[in-house]
Amino acid sequence: MSEFYEIFYCLENSIRKLVADMMVEAEGADWWNSSRVDAKRIMEPATARRKKEIDSGITARSEQLIDYTTFGELSQLITDNWDLFDPIFQSKTAVSNVSNQLNLLRGPIAHCNPTDELEQERLNLAVRTWFKIMS
Image (cartoon, rainbow, N blue to C red; front, side, top):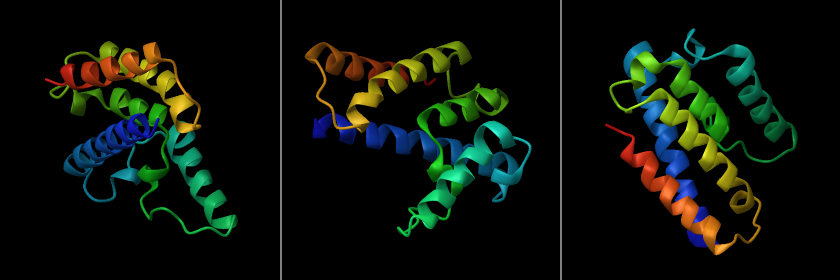
């Protein structure tokens, strides 16, 4: 299962970097505090996750709140800011559909559960589809 965890780790962080890069280009370094980030659906939950980590006494994983976003929130950032991402992706609906599928496949991997061979094939196909829908 470590192979699939690594695939997801790389994919999720590449999406996180893409979102951050596009937002910095559009809004500048303080993009997180711009109107492009929905306070209720993205900013507040990410802030709460960081606070919980700090309050638990463990080292904060990052100073950047985007590093506390979930896979679903990353997808939401893309679709909420479609004007920025339209040149990169073929279809807003495809982004939603593929990211939803990836998010479903992510659960067992992220929680260290074995997955069926068919689900492993689905993951590989979904990752390939993600990169295919990028223009």
